[in-house]
Image 1: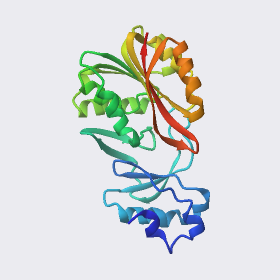
Image 2: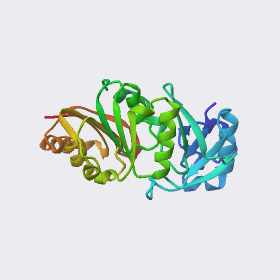
Image 3: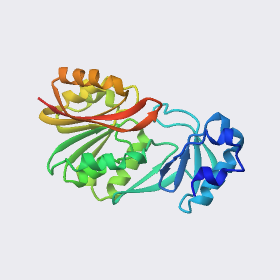
Image 4: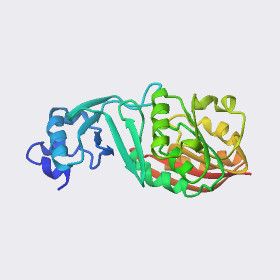
Length: 266
């Protein structure tokens, strides 16, 4: 039974229509983004979710957008144990993290595997905005040497732990640093750069392209409306990048989606 169906008769219909059809699950934690109209019913919603999903031990409500140095949202505990540390399993890999202190998007699992499948053993790969390692670990597992750049010190610690957990630590170098300054921090170029760029940091694209060897690949993620994509494509081509593919990776707000450009440096 879907969550909305379980709540009929408990939450008024005029409020229930504001309940999202889906929710974000990281390991044993469910993360909701409840509209203000549901404030009076958040306990009932969270309890119904716990009853529906036996594997969930905590339900959180995201109360802000991503913010601060760690690029994480503020969370409130609605139900369950309240423990925000979890273990997330994805395509055979295991990630430990604290969802209240480290950004993690479980909805990108298939996309991460799509990119990793293109990596060849022996490649040098840069992953800025590396987080706790969901792009880094599967790429290293393909036999690449990965430089993981992350500004959030806690995320770096979780990433190092996840590298060990997945037995790829020898192929990963974790650097605590700001991706906006990666050209100064890293005196080398790479066969491939994978940039899961945060919202509003599109200016990093030119720097990221400079880190790619001629003939190398840049996977660049951005948040845009569909009618902005063609102009963006032309801008990347002006940087000397050949767009091989552009694809949508899910909606993030009405009219705005996450897009990825797979590009080869000419």
